[in-house]
Amino acid sequence: KFSPQYEIRSRADLVPRVVLAEPSADLLVPPDEVVALKGYAKDDLGLKKVAQAVKINQGDWKELPLSQDGGLEVKIGRMWDIYDLRVQPGDHVTTKLVAVDLKGNHAESAPVHLTISARGFDPQRLVRVVDRAHRHSHN
Image (tube, rainbow, N blue to C red; front, top):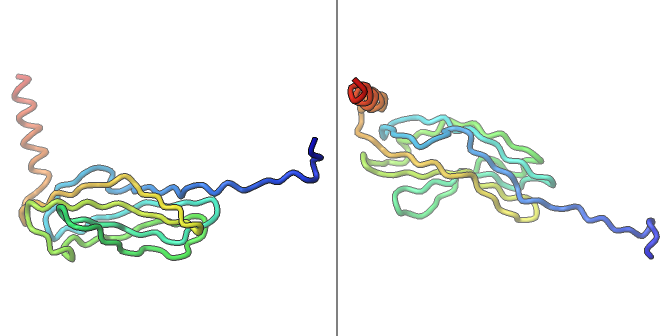
C-alpha cells in the first residue's frame, strides 16, 4: 500500500470556457451597423489569448486579438463596426470568440450569424410585418 505522504496529485488543466453573451441570437443588420459584442473567457490555469474570429460568406476565418496573457478570466466588451468588413447586402457574417489557455488548449463560443440587409432597412420593420400577419391570421 502507498503511504499518504507519497501521494501525487496532478492539477487537471481544463479546456477554457468561452461565452459570447451578446449578440445572443442571429441578427439582420445594415452594412454600417455597430454591434455590441459582449462575453467572457475563463480558464483554471490562465488564458494565453482571447480573440474574435470572423468569417464572411464561405471565406476563411480571420482573428482579431482581444486579449493577450489575460489571467484566469477575461471580460470581452467591444463595439464592433460592421462597416470595417466592407460587406454588401445579402452577405453572411459569422463570428465567435476563441480562447487559448497557457497549455495550448483551445475553445470556441457558439457562433452568431449576421445577415447584411440593405442600407437604411429597418430590421424592426420585418418584426412588425410578421407580427401584423400573425395577428391577421388569428382574426
